[in-house]
Amino acid sequence: MATRAIPTASLLSRTSRITSPQCLRLASTTHSPHHITHNHNQQQRRSISAYGYEQSKALTFPSYGDPSSVLSLHTHSISPPHGNQMTLRYLASPINPADINQIQGVYPSKPNFTTSLGTASPIAVAGNEGVAEIISLGDAARSAGFKRGDWVIMASPGFGTWRTHASATPSDVVLLSDAARDGITPIQAGTVSVNPCTAYRMLKDFVALDEGDWFVQNGANSGVGRAAIQLGRAWGLRSINVVRARSDKAAEDALKKDLLAIGADVVVTDEELQAQGFRDRVKEETGGKPIRLALNCVGGKPATAMAKVLASEAHFVTYGAMSKQPLTIPASMLIFKDIHFHGYWVSKWSARHPEEKKATVEDVLDLTRKGAFRDTPVEEVKWEWETKGEELIAKVKDTLEGYREGKGVFVFGKT
Ligand SMILES: NC(=O)c1ccc[n+]([C@@H]2O[C@H](COP(=O)([O-])OP(=O)(O)OC[C@H]3O[C@@H](n4cnc5c(N)ncnc54)[C@H](OP(=O)(O)O)[C@@H]3O)[C@@H](O)[C@H]2O)c1
Image 1: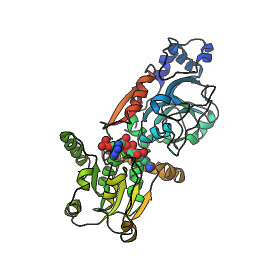
Image 2: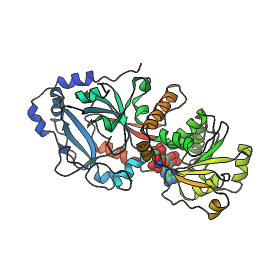
Image 3: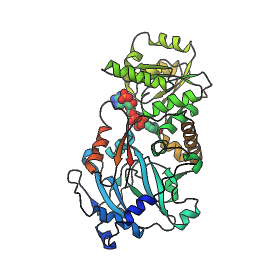
Image 4: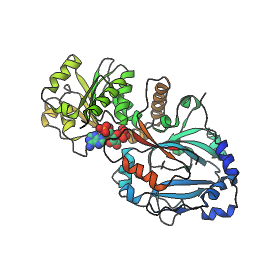
């Protein structure tokens, strides 16, 4: 059975700080990122959970823009749940590239700007992925099959997951059954629904690959790329993986070794991919077997170069544009090689296939439990009740910059 994060301890610690319920009226405060005040009453304000109210802090934005200018830490209270309402306490929420794009206003899935968090003007809570535990719920939510202590992930993007607590209804979430979460950590559950699902569906849904077949991908060190390597390996597929070259060759070698260790067959840099003679090398590696699937995270010239190693009638699936460069397709690839170019968006797929999404998540968690699917390297960003907004926002900003050791994940402590 899973080790359950029953909230008893945190509730007890709050109960020990009970103050007057009048403090509810103080609960909603938005701090500008540059003027975050640290009110000595914060501890007192939290303690109103003893009355069934919950205090929450959320990274919110009032309008689209650069994350470091528009994000701020907002404190508000959540009423006791009734009917189909549930109060969630977040356990882990990743900082994905799409979250940044959403704050910038350039992501197609828009957040919900609302005044329901106690502000005069609408604000939205950032973040799209994460896992939370149910800490209290109304009768209708209970009748719908939920209980206190259950873990849930988000049903769709736009809910807002960079927050300590939230009020949700059953349609906002997907329940992780006791069996599904058995032996799974909050970080594993909190990062399962986007990247591993994307890799899983792209390997399965565009062309039927048999054991021993090859695929090629760029952005191989991304969360999606690492998931594709591992899922491919678990299913007997073989992979050619392209990563960005590093100026530090020792770091580049270490990265290659790391990806080989999780199941990559071949790892090359984008420079090697674009060098003369690369197609001969591919033939050597694959023994001349056709490559019928390419996964494109990057775009630009390396993506075009990757398409050149594909067999006739192969499928080329674009799911990211990390280089911000357009994808250029020579006409000959369409006319003579009849390569099929597709786009893939896991959000749209999940909305259309909710049951398959649940099954995909459960399958990945099962592989994780068996040790066949290892975690993507992460940088844990601890979020305690007292953590300052500036610290959290700085970590969001880091996501946009340079070569990183691991994906940032907010890991919630005593909130
Ligand atoms: N369409 C979908 O449904 C879907 C689902 C999930 C993710 N995505 C997209 O997939 C991409 C990867 O997401 P993730 O969460 O897996 O990423 P991640 O784990 O945060 O890693 C980001 C990756 O992007 C690479 N990168 C950054 N800047 C780059 C540049 N200028 N040129 C080439 N590569 C660059 C990094 O390469 P290094 O390793 O060299 O640092 C790193 O591997 C994002 O574009 C994301 O929006 C799409």
